[in-house]
Image (cartoon, rainbow, N blue to C red; front, side, top):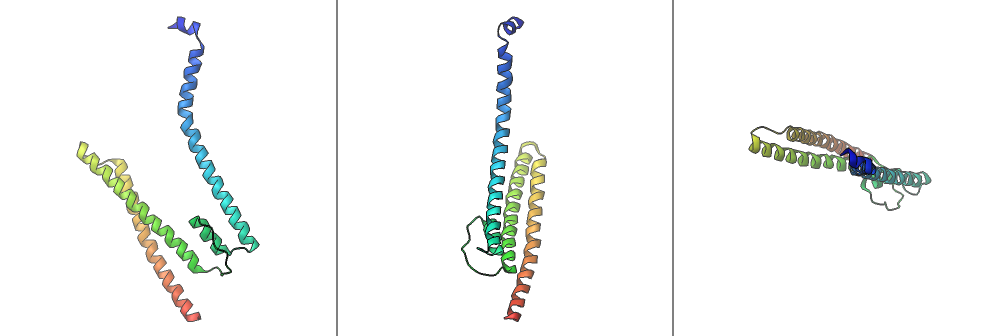
Length: 160
């Protein structure tokens, strides 16, 4: 073996570089994707803020466009609390979706692990409890937003 190393020492460098490339490629890809998404979001935020500062679109409409990812129509509507409530309802609905998905994946992992070796899988249990937490968050936020939207509706009726 040492005789082969004396004749071709570059093999050690080639093996080292191959292993380095194998483990470094996914890291570089993940960092590149995250950097691209953050840069894209920052540029979109700056563009919407610039439009809102110039008065082309109202700030509430700019916030809604940033949250949904869809370009807004240019109108002269005044910003309102109802826009904020509708944005928050969209985020709350996302909490319900995350909760259901995490709970179902966790239950599937727990059930599979219980069938295989008779004990619950800790990753499955963590996902189940995270999912239940998201569902509880959805329930509490939904009740709060319903009360808020009812109070906004009552105040709008009283002022009109």
